[in-house]
Length: 313
Ligand code: HSE
Image (cartoon, rainbow, N blue to C red; front, top):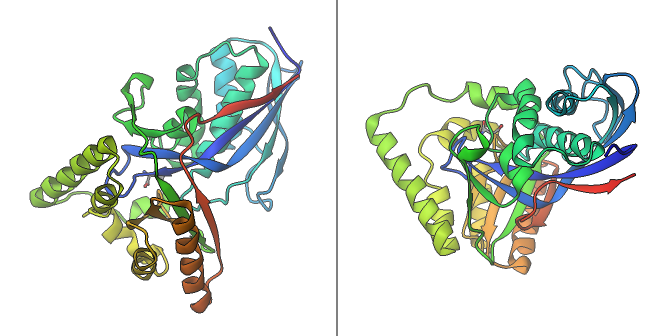
């Protein structure tokens, strides 16, 4: 069945979870991007409009993450018609919240819904990754949680290599995004290409501790393990304003710990209560205010459903 238009939502995500560089990710309830796909007789993809990006994103469908994901989905569907996309960006760009993944995933889900949901969510991983790859490399630690929701262990880019982890019930997250852009490519360029064996052992141990803590729903241990990252955070810390000060503020206001969200600069504090998360967010923002740095805060939880269709006509 072919429809005339379909709209899909795809949530913000946090890659890495501190110690799990490129292999762990989670989906937030909100915010998220919305993509509307309309059927056209002309084959191929066009971008009618992008709202909320301040004119920063390319409207060229062959370069835009949503445009590429839409074209890849059409190809996989094997249809001759085309689509016109309208993209509503609710996620800040270059902020560590999986903005490019959200647009790619929302486009793939919307295009699939236009053609009667022929492909499964698992089959949409590849087209979504095609979109993501155009801007930040072919890794699925944002795309997988964005598509499937929850906390994901990404052991490869094949859908069968994505493992769903349990969601600790009382997990609440306080996010703060300072008003500085950190391009993923830049944040990846500062990383070491090799690490000492001792560091590898410690990093592996913290990663194992994190998975164990997630399975036991032990938020305190989870945060400790997330903060155990020996490799990525030290290399990127200089890109995140007041990282260590924010960690101290978050903890002294009741958070269990704080890590960089994805490639940053958003920071994510791990809390076990909504009120505590709000207090932590306010305190962190006051810290940035005092330093003359504008910031935006969000308190949210984990999305269990991930990307989904909002409406079909
Ligand atoms: N794992 C990636 C990174 C996420 O930290 O570079 C950002 O795309």
